Length: 464
Image 1 (cartoon, rainbow, N blue to C red):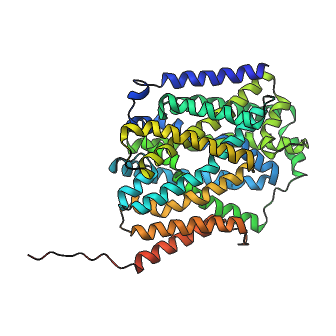
Image 2 (image 1 turned 180 degrees about the vertical axis):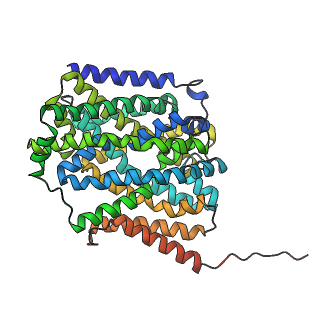
Image 3 (image 1 turned 180 degrees about the horizontal axis):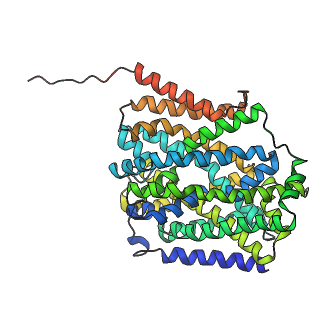
């Protein structure tokens, strides 16, 4: 009972913060303000918004679940790619902001449209961005179900995901990205406290050394060569895709200057300090031989066994806000992709309302995927990155203002994405190398070959 009261209290406070974020209210809010805050956010709001999108429910649920299911070495790539992405973000993030300002962009496809002047390429980027964000939405719903089950609520998974979808949609409808930025501050505080509390509870009740020793008898702490190649190639591949997520690009557009982006990237690695506590919680679940219905329940299994009710409610609230915030961010990216890029003829005054309809449809699709295709959360992370990282070569061309033929970029993206999904289904043996990295190499090779091979456009000079 106490856990549910604390949980509901935090959620209600998040709704209050969303309402406080409104400026002028409702329909008077412009499209640019609704989706990118009119490029007015300072360093603190950009920092919390970006961190909120990075450290999603996959951090609290997926990371411990991966370690519980496949051992601690499976989590190495998860830590490594995030840490490597920050230096890339420091240098590329300001350039993404500058490109967004140059083309008055709201979405990732807006950048491709503005630079390449190709409708076909814009459609490919827009369509595939939506397709590969479906697993990311499923990832959040999967974690939300695990979080709400931790409260002991006797609801079916369908009811749990419908509650989650309704909350995410409510956040968005209130004031768009301004609401999510305010909630991100609350989410980060509650999430960090929850993770640290569970880790400290494990240390106090079971002992760090004892937990590690007991878990080490059941899982291997050593990598074989195949596992090492997978970890290193995945770190490299997903670090490049980290800021190719459409919602990550959109977060950069909310900043008021390029220097704002640099300032946020400097301090982002401090969040990595919470991961030892997550490892400790997952090791506890392993050492206690807890029989879980799903590996995704590992973190909450430790919390349920060790924490009083009110603290358990705080942990569930932190996890729920993590998932809801990212879900809202995904929706805020997909809505304008449809209304601006797939249907460019739509008048701007209708785009916000139409985006809300698109968002509702996306949430329903993600719910269906969650209910009928359950999966380990770290697998969903990999699948999403297979597709979005293929935008990286074309994005570098934009950021450094180079001239490459749109057809070459489009074909490279398609080859990379199709080959990644084909190999994911067939599972060929590449000695452990990440399939997405191999597909990215094919992407670059095709793009370069087509750019060189295609005939240059003929410039016709009129008669004097």
